[in-house]
Length: 123
Image (cartoon, rainbow, N blue to C red; front, side):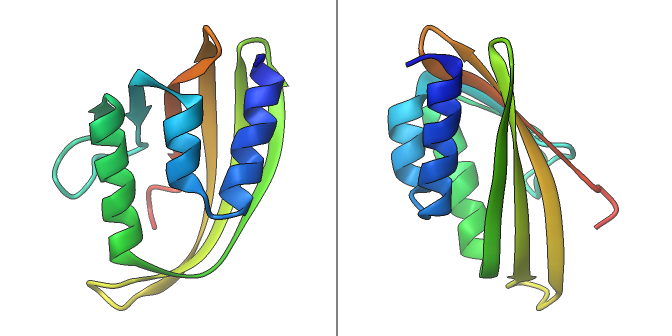
C-alpha cells in the first residue's frame, strides 16, 4: 500500500474502533510512538510493537470513552496527519474532558514507522 492507502485504512479502522487491527496490519514491528508529554510511567516515547500496544491498552483501560471521532487523513509525501476528538472520563480521577489531538504518521516500505501526537498539554 502507498501512504494514502495506509492513511485511509488507518482512519477507517479507527472509526470502527479496530485499533488493535490497525496496529497489527499497518504498523512496522519497530514502530516508534511519541507523545507530546511523558505518560504516567515517565515515558514519552514507546519503541516497538509491544510497547506501543501496551501504551494503547493503558489509555483505553484508564479512560471511559463517551464519544470519539476521527478526521482526515491529510497527506504530505511519506507522512500524513489524522485528527482525533474524544469525550472521555479519566477513570482514576473521574474528570470528564474533551480531547482534540492530531497524529502525524510517517510511512516507509508500506508500514507506519513513526507516530507523533500533538495536543494541548495543559489538559
